[in-house]
Each structure stands twice: as C-alpha cells, then as structure tokens.
Image (cartoon, rainbow, N blue to C red; front, side):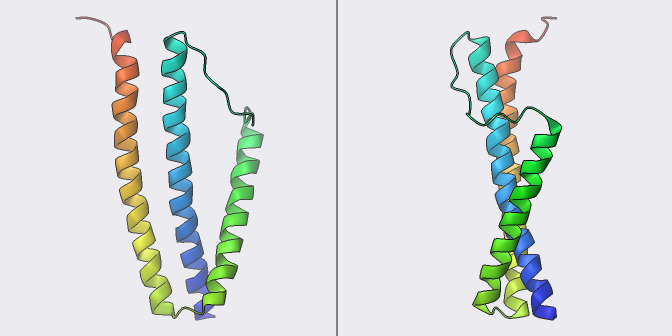
Length: 122
C-alpha cells in the first residue's frame, strides 16, 4: 500500500510539472497573440478551438487522467522504494515552483511591454 501511495504521489508531482509548463506556454502565447493583434499583423491560430469552459475542463481533466495514470503505471514498473519516490516527488515539486516562478516573471515582463503603451500619461 505504501508503494502505491508513493507512486501516486510521484505521478501527481510529474503531472504538476507538466501542467505548469503547459499553462505557462498557453499564457505567454496569448500575450504574443495580443501583441500581434494590436500591431495589426496576422497571427496563425491553433487548429484546436478551446472556446468554452466545458471544452477547457474536459481537456484538462482528460490530460490529467492520461498523464497521471500513464505515469503511475510506468513508475510502478520501476519498483522504486518509497524513499526514492518521495524524494523524487519533492524534487519535481521544487522544480515546478522554479519553473512557475521564472515563467510567470517572464509573463509579467511580456504583458508589461504590451500594456505600457495604453497606460494613461500623468
């Protein structure tokens, strides 16, 4: 039972890192799209239209289930000790924090470049 829980913890930590990376990519892509629209230039849209909350939630839940279950199965096949799985989970969560910190800092820099011209002059 202990290994099942630690394997699940590691699978969830891996999912968190993947989720953070994909969300950062999406947020920064929206800033690029906005800047391109403001500049009056064409922007190549994604073929997949996620334009409702239902689609967004369905995709998010689906990706979560696929990543966690696939990761869990692979991790289980590795027969990691509980200590290794927990240590790896901690490292992945720390890495997730670092990626989020750096990624959102870059987002704030990018969005500031887009919004600065619209700030009122005082």
